[in-house]
Image 1 (cartoon, rainbow over the protein chains, first blue to last red):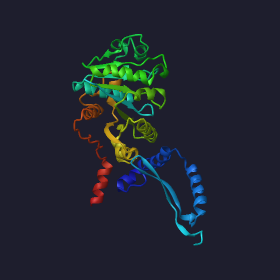
Image 2: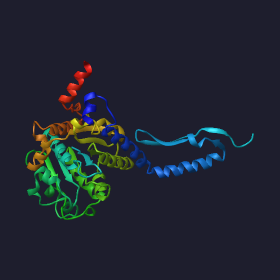
Image 3: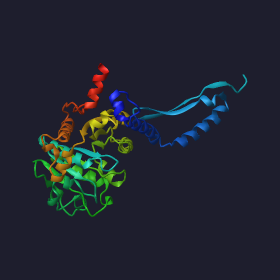
Length: 87
Length: 265
C-alpha cells in the first residue's frame, strides 16, 4: 500500500521512521551500557530506597535516559503521595 | 610541511572505508597536495587494488615496522597523480605485527614530507583499529544509512571521544535519495541527529564506484561521477574550503506528480 500512501500524500509509519526510532532507543542503552532489563532493576531498587523516606506513586513514576548531544542523563520523575516520617 | 594525519574508520565492515580513503587521497592530490595513504588492514590488504597499484607492491607496512626495508622503499607512487603514494598492508600477517607505537613512529617520519597522511582502518574495535587511530590528528567515520552501520558508528564515536581524538566527523556513504524520498531509508539528517556529530560529506550510491574500482582508477578522476564529485567536495572541506552539500533529490515519480495535481485540484 506504499504506492497508495505516496499517491494520497499521507505518510504512515515509514521504514525510515521505524529505523530512526529503533536506533534512538538502542543507542540510549548502548551508550550507558545498560539493557532495558537492568534499567528495570535500577527502577525497582529506587522504589525500595525512596519509599523508606516518602510515599510514592509507583504507577506513575518514570525512570528514563535522556540525551543531550552525546551526553546521557538519568531522569527519575517520581510523584510523591505522602510523607513517611511524622513531623 | 607537517602532515595532518587523518584516520578513516567505521566499526562495521563493508561501508566504504577503503573506497573513501582512495578517493579522498586522490582528490587531495588533484588539489596539488602531497598525500600518502596507509593501508592499516594487516592481513586483509585492499587499498592497493582499489588504487590500482597491486602489481607494484614489493615491501609493505610490516616490512617497514620490522626494519626489513626503509620507509621510502615501501612507498608506491600512484600511476595517475603526482604527489600521491601508498604504503600497503602486509597480506600474510596479522594485526599484532604492528603496534600503536609503530604507527605513531611511521607517521612522525612521514609528516615532514607530506600534507596529508590518510590511514585506512580495518573494521572492528580491536588491535587493528587501535593501531589506525593512535597517530590520528583527525578521525573520519564512514557509515551507510542502515541501522547496523549507524549503531557501530556510534560505538566508534564513543571510543574516539574516550581516547581524546574527537570530535570525529561523519561521511554518510551510499545514500539513495529515491529511497529516502519514499520513506524507506534513513536520511542524512536522521543519521547526524542520532549520532550527534558533524557531517563532513554525503556520498550518493553510485554504480560508477564499482566501475572505477573494477578499473583501479579512483572515481574522483571521472568528471561525471556523482560519487566522485562528493569525494572531491569532501577533500575540499578537509582543506577548509566552503563547499555546500550536494543536492541529492530524486526526481519526483509520475505517481507523486499525479498525486500533487490531484491534491491541488
